[in-house]
Amino acid sequence: MSSCEHVSEKMSGFIDNELTQQESQKIRVHIEQCKSCSQLHADLMDMQSKIKSIQSDGGEEAALEKIMEDLGAKKTQNWGWIFVVIGSVMMMGYASMNILSEIDLTTFEGFFSTLIGLGGLLLFISVIRQRMVASKTDKYKDINL
Ligand SMILES: [Zn+2]
Image (cartoon, rainbow, N blue to C red; front, side, top):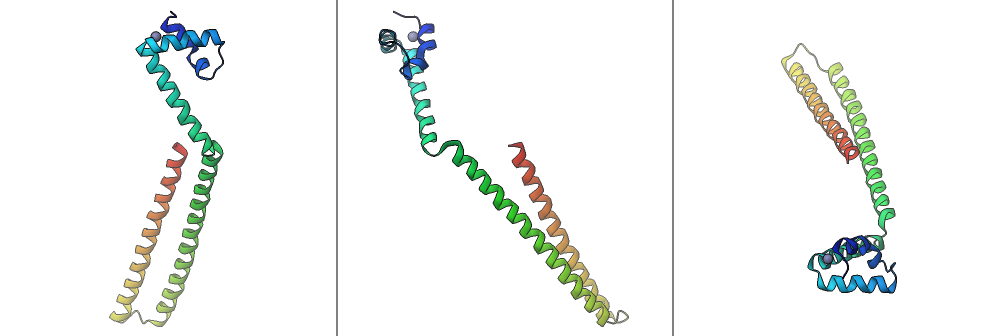
């Protein structure tokens, strides 16, 4: 009867059918009689079948493709935000310039509506800024993975 150490050394060869018939017969007999080696054999077989199922899904290539898709989507999203920010800021800037030139700041009404307009612009910019910082943080998370 072979020793457990010998069997565990030969186990992967046994599973891959790389052993001589005599050797693999010895190991088969040992596995049938030894609980720990039979457990090891079952674990390795289980692991191998998992690896095979991953490979049949397309394996690394598919995983890489998925990652690239994610990166592409993120880039598009970032550009989307940049356009939104530039467009909105320019539009608001233009609008508030028009308002400023038309409103008489010496009246309370004009002064307050200018304040409200500027306040809205500042709030909008801070929200966008937070959003940009958040997306930057996401990027670093991705790198750490
Ligand atoms: Zn054993």
